[in-house]
Image (cartoon, rainbow, N blue to C red):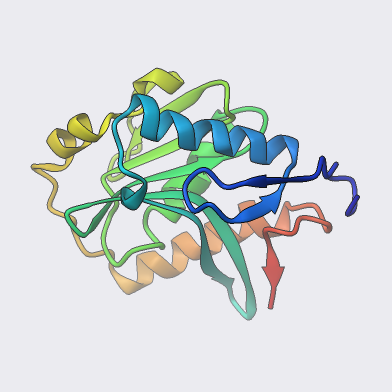
Length: 183
């Protein structure tokens, strides 16, 4: 057991087939991955799990993990961030990530605790829907993003969003969280 995170053994990652640590949080992530493929119609090749993202606040730098990035036609169209507990406290960091992980605004941002989800419009932060079953299907995401401009995020905005992400994900993290690497 590392820190206070209970390691239950190992499991095969549903998307990549890699052997990864089996934890309660990882079981929820795997549930979400199966939902995306089995019920929402995504191909495994549409999904990038566990994306490392460099965030910075002044001289402080760290890498964090983004749970799922969804690509359609070569464009990043949806970001999904898992975290246990309250969803409302996780809205701002997923929106910040949607403005840092790509050079353009990702149209759809999803925050989930594995039991519930909130689907947010990336540019406005408006809650589009709630519930795991309301995560857009592949067909729905194609329609949702058809009119998206994928507007470039100005460098100053990216810097501020990275600071926000650092504060939420790094400053407030548990010292034994292995998904965060302080640089």
